Every structure is written in C-alpha cells, then in structure tokens.
Image 1 (cartoon, protein in one colour):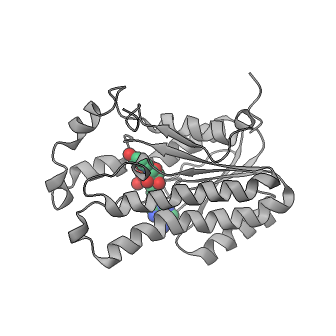
Image 2 (tube, protein in one colour):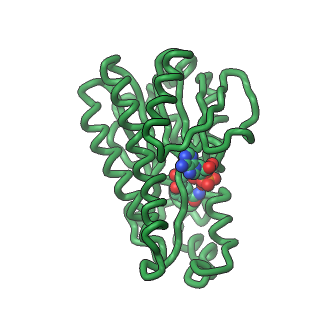
Length: 252
Ligand code: NAI
C-alpha cells in the first residue's frame, strides 16, 4: 500500500471537542499530522505533541478568516481541513421556530461555507490541499422530525461537491463523509431528550438498528478512519465523493 503522505502536514479541524472530533484528532495525530483543533470550547481537549487547540465559532465568518490567517502566519500553510462542527435539531416542522431553523443552518451549513471559502482562498494559489466535510446520511434520506437538520446537511453536502468542482483544477480534493447514527453525545443526547422530539422518536434506537444492514451503529473511530483516508494521498483520485458510513442504511 502507498504511504498516506499525511505525516508532517498541517490540518485544521472544527468541532474537534465532539464525540467524532476526538476520534478524528487521535487518528490524524497517529498519522503524524500537526493538528489545529478548534471548537467553541477547547478546554476539554487533552494536550498532545503536534496538537494546538484554539477556540472558534464557525458561525462567525470573520473569526474563521482570522483564525486561518493566524495559523498560517504562526505555523505555516494549512494543508488540509476537516469540518465537523455541527448541531442536531429535532422537532416537527410545525413546531420549529425561525430561530431554531436559522441556528442549525448557521452552524451546519454556513459554518462549512465559512471554512471552505477561507481554505479555498489560501489553498488554490498553492495548488494543493485536501478538504473533508462531515455531513450526514440524513442529507439524502427524509427523516421524521428532523427537517431542519436534514435540510442543512443536504445543503452542506451540495456545497462541498460544488467546492470540489471549483477546486479540482487547482489540485485540491474536497469530499464528504456521511455518517449514519454514530455513538456520540449527539445521538445519546437525542435519545435522552424526554420532551418534544422524544414523543415522535420513541423507540428510535431499536428502529435504527433494524434499519441498518450491518446491525450496529457506527463508532467515532469508524468515521475518523474515513476522514483520515480521504485526507490522505491514498485517496488521491477521489474528489466530490459522498462516503456513506452507515452500515448500509442508506441503500438498504
Ligand atoms: P458532537 O455534538 O459530539 O460534536 C459536535 C461539536 O461541534 C461539539 O463539540 C460542538 O461544541 C461543536 N460545535 C457546535 N456548534 C459550533 C460552532 N458554532 N462553532 C464551532 N463548533 C461548534 O457531535 P458528533 O456526533 O461528534 O458530530 C460531529 C459531526 O458529525 C456533526 O457535524 C454531526 O452533524 C455529524 N453527524 C453525527 C452523527 C451522529 O450520529 N453522531 C450522524 C451523522 C452526522
């Protein structure tokens, strides 16, 4: 097998303090990457060699631009990035207020646009780079009581494909990872919700499992390994792809 080529490269990760984010950090550090880990609160990210943690709200485009400029000035060129920052929103459309709708788009869609644009500006002139956007298999399957989340992820997935098309002539790849239900606080938090959404998703964990051909949920490591692969030279001819990591749920 060819080497991954990741060792020594600099990667920026958003949503790095989350359930999948932590596994992504471990996977990228294990590959020898120099990792800039960002999240709203980075105090819980354990210190490690080649790891720098910086706070970042991806909904703030000026802050995203400033962070990219700062990292490039202080550390050097960013070779790769992975957008993981996201929030879940559940509830029937009839019960979704304007603020909730806008909030989920602000994080899941605008946030990915903000980082994608900042990376396009610095990567394109250099003619190399790799971008991974963690969207969701909800981008392609209507989900009961998840309209805002699914719609925000569908927009994000299409944005990432378009970004890949724009950046391909510059030798930059942009791919989507689309997890199915993954065992992280985002999922367990949803199931623990005793009000509103829980009314319509009662018993969902079992339903989820029976709808997954492999019969189990993803682990954060399942997602992290795919992120590392798509950032690596082993995925050198892969761009604008949607990699579903959902145990076969989408195509069942
Ligand atoms: P998580 O809730 O554990 O982590 C998400 C992280 O995003 C958190 O650390 C949170 O602080 C951060 N975040 C939220 N708003 C932010 C903002 N404005 N700026 C910067 N960071 C912000 O969730 P998990 O499971 O690790 O999810 C990671 C990604 O994977 C998300 O985009 C999520 O939508 C996606 N995903 C997760 C699935 C799951 O079952 N857990 C399934 C499909 C997709």
